[in-house]
Length: 389
Image 1 (cartoon, rainbow, N blue to C red):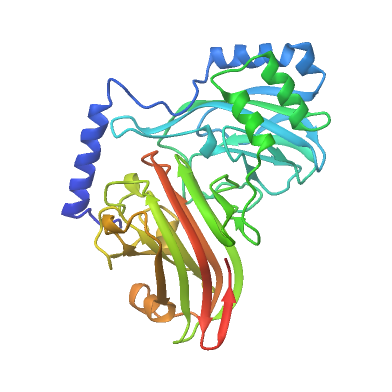
Image 2: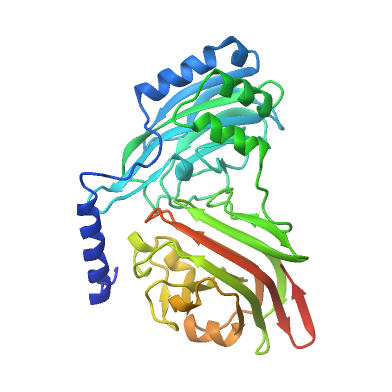
């Protein structure tokens, strides 16, 4: 049985409702508009002879929030480059101004291989598996497996709207085709953004990969300045978890060390309820499937510990507010946490090993911007030091 919200959470919901009411006459868009205008613009671009000469196949589809996987009638081979230009989005609550655009919920798969998400609503992916190409629009939630089965424990209902998608399979790569398309026209900047994405890709930092459940992103990147390395995080209306695999024993002496600088937080309300659960953090995953995440908070007191308020994640994730003093924003801060004793306090009987280190960025709920930077991440146990970033 779900716990009843406390007084502080009720106050947060009240503040959120007031904001939603203030935006009633000037709602924030979820992205470019889907519908007839989008379809006509995409059809005209695809029909341009200079564009058509680069296109092997293309489809226009309209997707609802509760539909199953839809065949695109296109067969792809490993290595094919597929560009997706998408518009529209889904609303979870218009009164609370809660919704998400196509960059969050558009997924593809081919030939029974692993699912993959477009990093943005105008971006290109390289197909890893061959076979029939399928697409689905899925609100943030949980998969049953990496092949795209839906988990019945987390139903996909409760949202409304439409996502329109133009899916293009190029003959010889996306860059030349998008350059031709940009000369032919655009629709609300989608082509320009896809071209910029193709020209300036943002690979995941070396040794790290995005959690498959949330898909690839453009949130984290390696940075080098004055001989120093860091990982920069820029999140805005999206979500991503970056993971680094390790195999490290969890003992009384195990420490997680890192430095970070949070310049902007993606939420200015307490983050312990679903509609405001936007935050920046570093986390440790253990061999029992649990994770403990040390977060920056805009409003919760330092030392606050709470279970994640999101479905599925409430079974596996615990949050520890490590920083919340606004005077520390924009400053490099050095941290060292005794992971085993922290786990015992926050979760319970400690497991045996650490299996991953995570960086987390969530800004999908309030659709605000978050900026952060990490450096000097390492696991330490006596003389043993595992440098991660």
